[in-house]
Length: 102
Image (cartoon, rainbow, N blue to C red; front, side, top):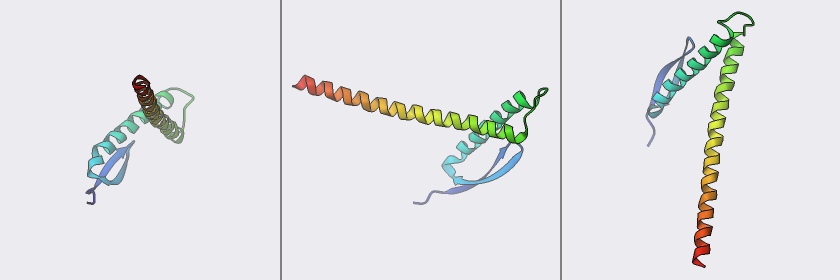
């Protein structure tokens, strides 16, 4: 069964983007746009809306993208580590049970 697709307009730092996505992801896109806007505003407050030295809009966007990417990768690594730790614990548990049965 094909997923129902939806068009959504998201606003990112004064720009509108039309996004086609499955209906289930609508809230995810809205939250993501809000998160990106907050990151950009934080960098604007830190580097543009203060006295010199100021950064360009391009630098601000790149810094925000880098910050978001670091968070995503860190989350992914934590998830992978958790999965690996679970596998190790499960294997140790199985080995202990096998030793008890011997």
